[in-house]
Image 1 (tube, protein in one colour):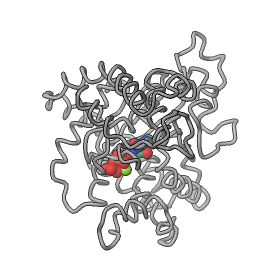
Image 2: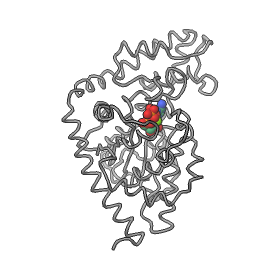
Image 3: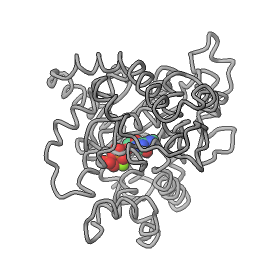
Image 4: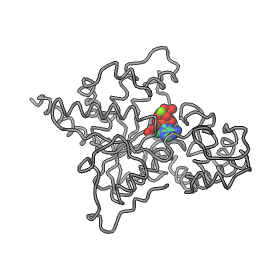
Length: 367
Ligand code: ATP
Ligand code: MG
Protein backbone atom coordinates (compact mmCIF):
# COMPACT_ATOMS: atom_id res chain seq x y z
CA UNK A 1 0.00 0.00 0.00
CA UNK A 2 2.77 2.47 0.75
CA UNK A 3 5.14 3.64 -1.97
CA UNK A 4 8.87 3.39 -1.82
CA UNK A 5 10.69 6.00 -3.80
CA UNK A 6 14.21 5.78 -2.46
CA UNK A 7 16.75 7.12 -4.92
CA UNK A 8 18.19 4.10 -6.76
CA UNK A 9 21.89 3.40 -6.96
CA UNK A 10 21.91 3.62 -10.73
CA UNK A 11 19.19 6.08 -11.60
CA UNK A 12 20.11 6.35 -15.28
CA UNK A 13 18.97 2.75 -15.85
CA UNK A 14 15.47 3.55 -14.72
CA UNK A 15 12.66 4.43 -17.12
CA UNK A 16 11.27 7.94 -16.80
CA UNK A 17 7.58 8.34 -17.32
CA UNK A 18 7.36 12.02 -16.45
CA UNK A 19 7.24 14.53 -17.91
CA UNK A 20 4.91 13.39 -20.64
CA UNK A 21 7.61 11.79 -22.85
CA UNK A 22 6.88 8.20 -23.81
CA UNK A 23 3.78 7.31 -21.87
CA UNK A 24 0.32 8.54 -22.73
CA UNK A 25 -0.57 10.89 -19.86
CA UNK A 26 -3.82 10.13 -18.06
CA UNK A 27 -5.43 12.62 -15.74
CA UNK A 28 -4.54 10.77 -12.56
CA UNK A 29 -1.79 8.73 -11.01
CA UNK A 30 -2.33 6.56 -7.93
CA UNK A 31 0.25 5.93 -5.23
CA UNK A 32 0.79 2.40 -6.51
CA UNK A 33 1.30 3.63 -10.08
CA UNK A 34 3.65 6.30 -8.84
CA UNK A 35 5.77 3.71 -7.10
CA UNK A 36 5.84 1.53 -10.20
CA UNK A 37 6.42 4.36 -12.68
CA UNK A 38 9.02 6.37 -10.83
CA UNK A 39 10.98 3.30 -9.82
CA UNK A 40 12.65 5.36 -7.19
CA UNK A 41 13.75 8.32 -9.26
CA UNK A 42 11.70 11.47 -9.48
CA UNK A 43 14.43 13.84 -10.64
CA UNK A 44 12.68 14.73 -13.88
CA UNK A 45 9.38 15.42 -12.17
CA UNK A 46 8.11 18.83 -11.22
CA UNK A 47 5.49 18.96 -8.55
CA UNK A 48 3.27 21.78 -7.34
CA UNK A 49 0.67 21.58 -4.68
CA UNK A 50 -0.68 23.87 -2.02
CA UNK A 51 -3.10 24.69 0.71
CA UNK A 52 -5.23 27.62 1.71
CA UNK A 53 -4.03 29.39 4.87
CA UNK A 54 -7.44 29.05 6.51
CA UNK A 55 -6.34 27.06 9.57
CA UNK A 56 -3.89 24.45 10.77
CA UNK A 57 -3.18 21.48 8.51
CA UNK A 58 -4.90 18.24 9.49
CA UNK A 59 -4.69 14.52 9.03
CA UNK A 60 -6.64 14.75 5.75
CA UNK A 61 -3.90 16.95 4.28
CA UNK A 62 -1.24 14.65 5.63
CA UNK A 63 -2.65 11.38 4.30
CA UNK A 64 -4.20 12.93 1.18
CA UNK A 65 -1.26 14.97 -0.03
CA UNK A 66 1.58 15.94 2.33
CA UNK A 67 3.06 12.45 2.65
CA UNK A 68 3.34 12.14 -1.10
CA UNK A 69 4.91 15.59 -1.38
CA UNK A 70 7.61 14.56 1.04
CA UNK A 71 8.17 11.25 -0.75
CA UNK A 72 8.52 13.01 -4.08
CA UNK A 73 10.83 15.66 -2.63
CA UNK A 74 12.99 12.96 -1.09
CA UNK A 75 13.07 11.06 -4.38
CA UNK A 76 14.50 14.15 -6.05
CA UNK A 77 11.44 15.81 -7.62
CA UNK A 78 11.53 19.57 -8.01
CA UNK A 79 8.91 20.62 -5.53
CA UNK A 80 6.87 23.83 -5.29
CA UNK A 81 4.69 24.16 -2.20
CA UNK A 82 2.14 26.94 -2.35
CA UNK A 83 0.51 28.92 0.42
CA UNK A 84 -2.63 29.81 -1.54
CA UNK A 85 -3.41 33.05 0.27
CA UNK A 86 -5.48 34.75 -2.46
CA UNK A 87 -7.78 31.73 -2.41
CA UNK A 88 -8.72 32.44 1.20
CA UNK A 89 -10.91 35.35 0.08
CA UNK A 90 -12.86 33.24 -2.40
CA UNK A 91 -15.36 32.17 0.25
CA UNK A 92 -15.00 34.67 3.09
CA UNK A 93 -15.08 38.43 3.32
CA UNK A 94 -12.05 39.01 5.47
CA UNK A 95 -8.66 37.43 5.80
CA UNK A 96 -8.26 37.97 9.56
CA UNK A 97 -5.40 35.98 11.03
CA UNK A 98 -4.04 35.12 7.60
CA UNK A 99 -0.40 35.88 8.50
CA UNK A 100 -0.55 33.50 11.45
CA UNK A 101 -2.18 30.82 9.33
CA UNK A 102 0.32 31.29 6.49
CA UNK A 103 3.33 31.01 8.82
CA UNK A 104 1.58 28.11 10.56
CA UNK A 105 1.33 26.30 7.22
CA UNK A 106 5.06 26.75 6.69
CA UNK A 107 5.70 25.30 10.16
CA UNK A 108 3.41 22.36 9.34
CA UNK A 109 5.27 21.76 6.05
CA UNK A 110 8.65 21.74 7.73
CA UNK A 111 7.37 19.51 10.54
CA UNK A 112 6.18 16.81 8.10
CA UNK A 113 9.48 16.87 6.21
CA UNK A 114 9.31 19.54 3.51
CA UNK A 115 12.87 20.85 3.29
CA UNK A 116 13.09 24.53 2.27
CA UNK A 117 16.58 23.93 0.92
CA UNK A 118 15.17 21.46 -1.63
CA UNK A 119 11.60 22.70 -2.07
CA UNK A 120 10.29 26.15 -3.00
CA UNK A 121 7.75 27.23 -0.39
CA UNK A 122 5.96 30.45 -1.31
CA UNK A 123 2.72 32.45 -1.17
CA UNK A 124 1.20 33.24 -4.56
CA UNK A 125 0.24 36.80 -3.59
CA UNK A 126 4.00 37.56 -3.60
CA UNK A 127 4.52 36.44 -7.22
CA UNK A 128 2.99 39.04 -9.60
CA UNK A 129 3.92 37.23 -12.84
CA UNK A 130 2.07 34.11 -11.67
CA UNK A 131 -1.06 36.17 -11.15
CA UNK A 132 -0.72 37.84 -14.55
CA UNK A 133 -0.92 34.41 -16.19
CA UNK A 134 -4.51 34.29 -15.03
CA UNK A 135 -5.51 36.78 -17.78
CA UNK A 136 -4.63 34.72 -20.86
CA UNK A 137 -5.76 31.52 -19.15
CA UNK A 138 -9.19 33.00 -18.37
CA UNK A 139 -9.73 33.65 -22.06
CA UNK A 140 -9.51 29.91 -22.69
CA UNK A 141 -12.49 28.75 -20.66
CA UNK A 142 -16.12 29.82 -20.66
CA UNK A 143 -18.28 31.00 -17.80
CA UNK A 144 -20.72 28.04 -18.20
CA UNK A 145 -17.77 25.62 -18.01
CA UNK A 146 -16.70 27.23 -14.75
CA UNK A 147 -20.26 27.29 -13.42
CA UNK A 148 -20.57 23.53 -14.00
CA UNK A 149 -17.54 22.73 -11.80
CA UNK A 150 -18.90 20.48 -9.00
CA UNK A 151 -16.21 21.44 -6.47
CA UNK A 152 -16.84 25.15 -7.00
CA UNK A 153 -20.57 24.50 -6.50
CA UNK A 154 -19.95 22.54 -3.28
CA UNK A 155 -17.56 25.16 -1.92
CA UNK A 156 -19.95 27.99 -2.83
CA UNK A 157 -22.79 26.17 -1.05
CA UNK A 158 -20.60 25.52 2.01
CA UNK A 159 -19.64 29.21 2.19
CA UNK A 160 -23.24 30.12 3.01
CA UNK A 161 -22.97 33.25 0.88
CA UNK A 162 -25.94 34.25 -1.26
CA UNK A 163 -23.99 34.74 -4.50
CA UNK A 164 -20.86 33.30 -6.05
CA UNK A 165 -17.99 35.82 -6.11
CA UNK A 166 -16.11 36.23 -9.39
CA UNK A 167 -12.98 35.11 -7.55
CA UNK A 168 -14.68 31.89 -6.41
CA UNK A 169 -15.89 31.21 -9.95
CA UNK A 170 -12.42 31.75 -11.41
CA UNK A 171 -10.59 29.98 -8.55
CA UNK A 172 -9.87 26.89 -10.71
CA UNK A 173 -8.23 29.12 -13.36
CA UNK A 174 -6.10 30.77 -10.71
CA UNK A 175 -5.15 27.28 -9.63
CA UNK A 176 -4.24 26.54 -13.25
CA UNK A 177 -1.88 29.54 -13.14
CA UNK A 178 -0.38 28.15 -9.92
CA UNK A 179 0.26 24.79 -11.52
CA UNK A 180 1.33 25.95 -14.97
CA UNK A 181 3.68 28.80 -14.03
CA UNK A 182 6.24 26.28 -12.81
CA UNK A 183 5.41 23.64 -15.47
CA UNK A 184 4.50 21.01 -12.93
CA UNK A 185 3.85 17.47 -14.15
CA UNK A 186 2.31 16.09 -11.02
CA UNK A 187 -0.07 17.59 -8.48
CA UNK A 188 -0.58 15.62 -5.24
CA UNK A 189 -4.15 16.48 -4.24
CA UNK A 190 -7.25 15.13 -2.57
CA UNK A 191 -10.21 13.91 -4.61
CA UNK A 192 -12.06 17.23 -4.20
CA UNK A 193 -9.45 18.88 -6.44
CA UNK A 194 -9.92 16.66 -9.51
CA UNK A 195 -12.46 18.94 -11.24
CA UNK A 196 -10.07 21.85 -10.71
CA UNK A 197 -7.17 19.88 -12.16
CA UNK A 198 -9.31 19.15 -15.18
CA UNK A 199 -9.63 22.93 -15.72
CA UNK A 200 -5.84 23.20 -15.63
CA UNK A 201 -5.48 20.44 -18.21
CA UNK A 202 -8.15 22.04 -20.40
CA UNK A 203 -6.64 25.53 -20.44
CA UNK A 204 -3.13 24.13 -20.97
CA UNK A 205 -4.34 22.08 -23.95
CA UNK A 206 -6.27 24.99 -25.42
CA UNK A 207 -3.32 27.37 -25.05
CA UNK A 208 -1.02 24.89 -26.76
CA UNK A 209 -3.48 24.42 -29.64
CA UNK A 210 -4.32 28.08 -30.08
CA UNK A 211 -0.82 29.56 -29.73
CA UNK A 212 2.20 27.28 -29.25
CA UNK A 213 3.05 24.17 -27.21
CA UNK A 214 4.15 25.94 -24.04
CA UNK A 215 2.54 23.80 -21.34
CA UNK A 216 2.53 20.15 -20.30
CA UNK A 217 -0.80 18.78 -19.05
CA UNK A 218 -0.23 17.91 -15.40
CA UNK A 219 -1.64 14.84 -13.69
CA UNK A 220 -3.15 14.52 -10.24
CA UNK A 221 -1.44 12.23 -7.79
CA UNK A 222 -4.21 10.62 -5.79
CA UNK A 223 -3.18 9.02 -2.50
CA UNK A 224 -4.54 5.90 -0.82
CA UNK A 225 -6.65 8.27 1.29
CA UNK A 226 -8.09 10.66 -1.33
CA UNK A 227 -10.86 11.95 0.93
CA UNK A 228 -10.33 11.57 4.66
CA UNK A 229 -13.55 12.11 6.60
CA UNK A 230 -13.82 14.26 9.71
CA UNK A 231 -15.55 13.67 13.03
CA UNK A 232 -19.00 14.37 11.53
CA UNK A 233 -18.57 11.98 8.59
CA UNK A 234 -18.12 14.82 6.04
CA UNK A 235 -14.79 15.57 4.30
CA UNK A 236 -12.25 16.64 6.90
CA UNK A 237 -11.82 20.37 6.19
CA UNK A 238 -10.12 23.21 8.01
CA UNK A 239 -13.24 25.32 7.82
CA UNK A 240 -15.68 22.63 8.98
CA UNK A 241 -14.41 22.23 12.58
CA UNK A 242 -14.23 18.45 12.12
CA UNK A 243 -10.48 17.90 11.88
CA UNK A 244 -7.63 16.18 13.67
CA UNK A 245 -5.04 18.99 13.41
CA UNK A 246 -1.47 17.79 12.95
CA UNK A 247 -0.48 20.01 15.86
CA UNK A 248 -3.17 18.72 18.29
CA UNK A 249 -1.88 17.20 21.53
CA UNK A 250 -2.23 13.47 22.21
CA UNK A 251 -5.07 14.18 24.66
CA UNK A 252 -6.87 16.47 22.23
CA UNK A 253 -6.53 13.78 19.57
CA UNK A 254 -8.02 11.16 21.90
CA UNK A 255 -10.98 13.38 22.64
CA UNK A 256 -11.53 14.29 18.95
CA UNK A 257 -11.42 10.64 17.88
CA UNK A 258 -13.80 9.67 20.70
CA UNK A 259 -16.32 12.04 19.11
CA UNK A 260 -15.98 10.54 15.61
CA UNK A 261 -19.24 9.35 14.12
CA UNK A 262 -19.42 5.55 13.62
CA UNK A 263 -22.37 3.17 13.12
CA UNK A 264 -24.33 0.68 15.19
CA UNK A 265 -22.83 -2.57 13.85
CA UNK A 266 -20.45 -3.85 16.53
CA UNK A 267 -18.57 -6.12 14.14
CA UNK A 268 -15.88 -4.01 12.43
CA UNK A 269 -15.49 -4.46 8.66
CA UNK A 270 -13.73 -2.45 5.97
CA UNK A 271 -16.45 -1.42 3.55
CA UNK A 272 -15.93 2.17 2.35
CA UNK A 273 -19.15 2.26 0.29
CA UNK A 274 -21.53 0.94 2.96
CA UNK A 275 -19.68 1.88 6.15
CA UNK A 276 -17.82 5.11 5.30
CA UNK A 277 -17.20 6.32 8.85
CA UNK A 278 -15.90 3.01 10.24
CA UNK A 279 -13.82 2.44 7.09
CA UNK A 280 -12.38 5.95 7.38
CA UNK A 281 -11.12 5.26 10.92
CA UNK A 282 -9.74 1.92 9.75
CA UNK A 283 -7.95 3.57 6.85
CA UNK A 284 -6.47 6.33 9.03
CA UNK A 285 -5.24 3.76 11.54
CA UNK A 286 -3.91 1.39 8.89
CA UNK A 287 -2.03 4.13 7.03
CA UNK A 288 -0.46 5.40 10.25
CA UNK A 289 0.63 1.84 11.07
CA UNK A 290 1.59 0.84 7.51
CA UNK A 291 -1.01 -1.94 7.56
CA UNK A 292 -3.84 -3.13 5.30
CA UNK A 293 -7.22 -1.73 6.48
CA UNK A 294 -9.16 -4.97 5.80
CA UNK A 295 -6.64 -6.97 7.87
CA UNK A 296 -6.93 -4.40 10.65
CA UNK A 297 -10.75 -4.74 10.57
CA UNK A 298 -10.39 -8.51 11.03
CA UNK A 299 -8.09 -7.97 13.99
CA UNK A 300 -10.59 -5.67 15.70
CA UNK A 301 -13.52 -7.93 14.78
CA UNK A 302 -16.19 -7.75 17.48
CA UNK A 303 -14.30 -5.15 19.52
CA UNK A 304 -16.72 -2.51 18.23
CA UNK A 305 -16.26 1.21 17.75
CA UNK A 306 -14.56 1.61 21.13
CA UNK A 307 -11.71 -0.74 20.20
CA UNK A 308 -11.45 0.86 16.77
CA UNK A 309 -11.19 4.34 18.28
CA UNK A 310 -8.59 3.18 20.79
CA UNK A 311 -6.51 1.73 17.96
CA UNK A 312 -6.96 4.90 15.88
CA UNK A 313 -5.93 7.19 18.74
CA UNK A 314 -2.85 5.15 19.48
CA UNK A 315 -1.79 4.91 15.83
CA UNK A 316 -2.34 8.61 15.06
CA UNK A 317 -0.57 9.78 18.21
CA UNK A 318 2.31 7.41 17.64
CA UNK A 319 2.70 8.38 13.99
CA UNK A 320 2.39 12.13 14.56
CA UNK A 321 4.59 12.32 17.67
CA UNK A 322 7.85 13.29 15.90
CA UNK A 323 5.97 15.66 13.58
CA UNK A 324 4.39 17.35 16.59
CA UNK A 325 7.72 17.70 18.34
CA UNK A 326 9.24 19.40 15.28
CA UNK A 327 6.13 21.57 14.90
CA UNK A 328 6.32 22.75 18.52
CA UNK A 329 9.98 23.69 18.12
CA UNK A 330 9.16 25.82 15.05
CA UNK A 331 6.12 27.59 16.45
CA UNK A 332 7.96 30.66 17.78
CA UNK A 333 10.28 31.03 14.78
CA UNK A 334 8.27 33.62 12.86
CA UNK A 335 11.35 35.34 11.41
CA UNK A 336 12.71 32.07 10.09
CA UNK A 337 9.34 31.01 8.65
CA UNK A 338 8.87 34.42 6.94
CA UNK A 339 12.35 34.21 5.46
CA UNK A 340 11.44 30.84 3.91
CA UNK A 341 8.43 32.44 2.21
CA UNK A 342 10.48 35.40 0.99
CA UNK A 343 13.17 33.15 -0.49
CA UNK A 344 10.49 30.95 -2.00
CA UNK A 345 8.79 33.95 -3.61
CA UNK A 346 12.08 35.04 -5.19
CA UNK A 347 12.61 31.60 -6.69
CA UNK A 348 8.99 31.32 -7.84
CA UNK A 349 9.19 34.80 -9.40
CA UNK A 350 12.10 33.73 -11.62
CA UNK A 351 10.04 30.77 -12.86
CA UNK A 352 6.86 32.78 -13.29
CA UNK A 353 8.57 35.59 -15.23
CA UNK A 354 10.18 33.07 -17.58
CA UNK A 355 6.84 31.33 -18.21
CA UNK A 356 4.99 34.62 -18.64
CA UNK A 357 7.61 35.78 -21.16
CA UNK A 358 7.12 32.57 -23.14
CA UNK A 359 3.34 32.93 -22.98
CA UNK A 360 3.43 36.55 -24.20
CA UNK A 361 5.85 35.58 -26.96
CA UNK A 362 3.53 32.73 -28.02
CA UNK A 363 0.62 35.19 -28.12
CA UNK A 364 2.62 37.66 -30.26
CA UNK A 365 2.84 40.17 -27.43
CA UNK A 366 6.62 40.39 -27.11
CA UNK A 367 7.00 43.98 -28.38
P1 ATP B 1 -10.78 24.67 3.58
O1 ATP B 1 -11.87 24.18 4.50
O2 ATP B 1 -10.28 26.03 3.94
O3 ATP B 1 -11.14 24.58 2.12
P2 ATP B 1 -9.35 22.20 3.44
O4 ATP B 1 -9.21 21.44 4.70
O5 ATP B 1 -10.38 21.73 2.45
O6 ATP B 1 -9.54 23.72 3.84
P3 ATP B 1 -7.49 22.93 1.38
O7 ATP B 1 -6.47 23.96 1.70
O8 ATP B 1 -8.72 23.36 0.63
O9 ATP B 1 -7.94 22.22 2.75
O10 ATP B 1 -6.84 21.71 0.60
C1 ATP B 1 -5.44 21.56 0.45
C2 ATP B 1 -5.10 20.24 -0.17
O11 ATP B 1 -5.39 19.17 0.75
C3 ATP B 1 -5.91 19.90 -1.43
O12 ATP B 1 -5.07 19.20 -2.30
C4 ATP B 1 -7.01 19.00 -0.93
O13 ATP B 1 -7.48 18.12 -1.95
C5 ATP B 1 -6.27 18.23 0.16
N1 ATP B 1 -7.24 17.83 1.18
C6 ATP B 1 -7.95 18.65 1.96
N2 ATP B 1 -8.77 17.97 2.77
C7 ATP B 1 -8.56 16.66 2.49
C8 ATP B 1 -9.11 15.44 2.99
N3 ATP B 1 -10.03 15.48 3.94
N4 ATP B 1 -8.68 14.28 2.48
C9 ATP B 1 -7.72 14.25 1.49
N5 ATP B 1 -7.17 15.37 0.98
C10 ATP B 1 -7.58 16.56 1.46
MG1 MG C 1 -10.77 22.98 0.67
